[in-house]
Amino acid sequence: MKIAVYPGSFDPITNGHLDIIKRACKVFDKVIIGVLVNPNKAGLFTIDERVELITKVVKNIPNVEVESFSGLLINFMKKKESKIIIKGLRAVSDFEYELQMSLMNKKLDPEIETVFMMTSAINSFLSSSAVKQVAIFDGCIKDLVPDEIIPCIFKKIKEL
Ligand code: PNS
Image 1 (cartoon, rainbow, N blue to C red):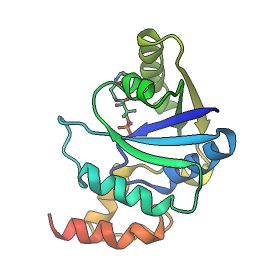
Image 2: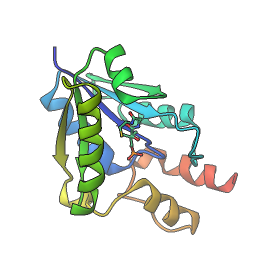
Image 3: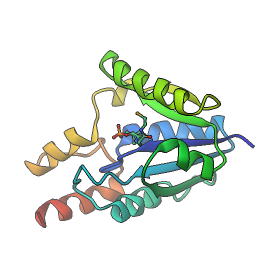
Image 4: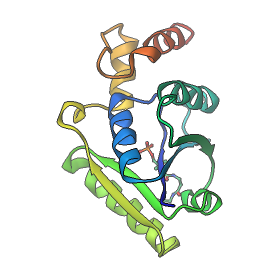
């Protein structure tokens, strides 16, 4: 059984993430979405809220699981019995950072492979930070994130 882990901050999940998840689910038997608990980076949503939003948008995809993790990704992967990391690549600017992480993970565990999926062109400009900026200034985030989480994003921003 080919189990892949798709790690990230997902603060919040975007249509770019969802596209990668859907495509990865066709390639692997199971995709585990790993939401990083990062004590050094306060986000808009708490970790539990991020997991809840992701769970809501992937509910109809049968071979996906969502879980949070802290510490090293390779330790989470060991726990989940996975050797495959999935990452999405948008532009050349992503490459350097992703190469560094992929090589570091390989150094920590040589059996790990990182599989990169190119963004769909329509999502190539998308990031969680850009979505938050637009939403904070009351801009339109339709087509940037799944429709069902738009009200949750605006509600959360109003609580800030
Ligand atoms: O969505 P992001 O913030 O770009 O995701 C980054 C993430 C979660 C993939 C990365 O920060 C990560 O794997 N963190 C866990 C710590 C770790 O294993 N570091 C070693 C690789 S440099």
